[in-house]
Image (cartoon, rainbow, N blue to C red; front, side):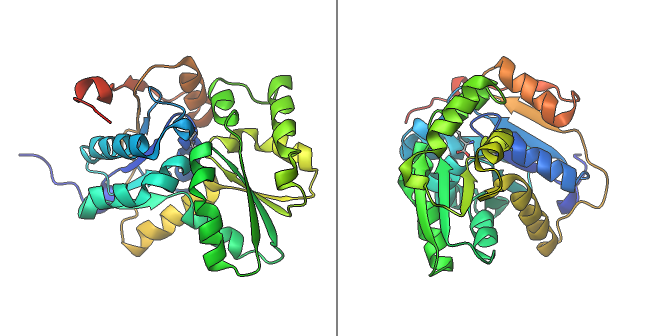
Amino acid sequence: MARKVSPSARPLGIFDSGIGGLTVASAIHELMPDETLVYFGDTAHLPYGDKSPEAIRKWSQAISDFLLTFNCKAIIIACNSISSVAFDVVKKHVGNKAIVINVIDPVVDYVCAQSGTKHIGIIGTKATVKSDVYALKIKQKSKKASVSSLATPLLAPMIEEGFFNNKISKTIINDYLSRPKIKNIDSLILGCTHYPLIRPEIEQYYKGRVNIFDSARIVAHHVQWVLDEHQLLNTGKAGKHRFFISDYTQSFEQSTKIFFKGKIKLEQKNLWKEREFKV
Ligand code: DGL
């Protein structure tokens, strides 16, 4: 007979199109080392930011089903593009089997609670910027704040390919950040979970003139708060973390090692071959 697992000992499911969600996963791991993680990076479909909302919704539901096979207590959508266009669909799909958390609401709440935030810039994928979800949510929370969003579609693939902290990334980042659309901002939300990896370069560009917010630590604290509210914080030790990708990429393997200090064994899980999958 299968051993009964206590509700709080169940793992956290985390997913993204690729390595971006690892910024969230590693912040969660740092804050709550006793939680067991099951990660899925859909590298076969990366980048999500250029894909249609319909495709993103289909893939996200299938990944959620896969994470639920591990009996996850919560599913964290560690991707702004998915959070923008598929959060409600995933939440409905998962129902009461697990708590579903997106990366946008905790950041909006956090940024709107900062005093002196008047003109907020958002950079993110085409999917995130097109959805306008940040502007809509910020305007609901803060009457005073104005929002300017800029799609920066080259950044996630660039990071996924390991281009950060070098001449190429600096040129592309500086080109995007100097666009008139996000001139005169006092705060900048890094609206893509890949971007914490280029945060030092963005900080170098602004030289302290702009407050920069990324989702990793803010979301980790939110997840901790939600688990605590539901009395689901693990009281024992973490089990074995699992990291799945839908297609093997060397850069993913290197990045998992940066974040989890080489202790990771990557597992390839081609969900899309196994499912009769039509969008
Ligand atoms: N990390 C993702 C995000 O936060 C998506 C990047 C992509 O696949 O386009 O939007």
